[in-house]
Length: 153
Image 1 (cartoon, one colour):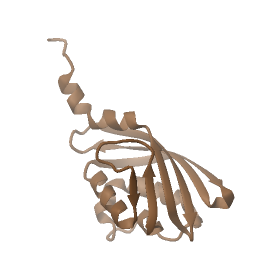
Image 2: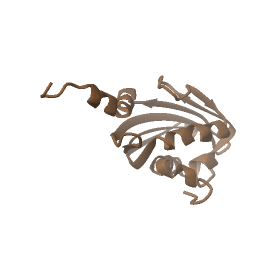
Image 3: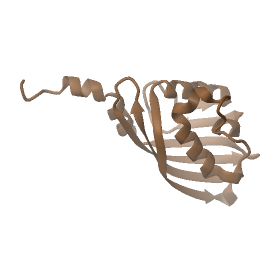
């Protein structure tokens, strides 16, 4: 990952590196943000507070990920499966990420499946599916533990 150009996104580096590696020589650019354009559509197929269902263009995607890295620091991304279809124009990746919720220190582990359409050696469309419950549980861990009854209650 470019150390200076995308330094603010270092907390998501394991994700970016995994995706970039999964796409290999199908796209041009060193970093994840180098392989998206102003025409890229990044669509999430889940409702999650604070994250838009559709993000259009590189600038808005970078802004959304800036919010992500302000809240979650990933330590790793793994369990990658790559499926190439339609002459490698469509790539399906399955993977997991592991990290920490910065506000609470809670562990964050999640599973994803992403369908990526490539045009002109760039990401044209991204459809993302994740374990929304895993994300919700990690982000609300402190609130749940504070509200849970104790043995002394």
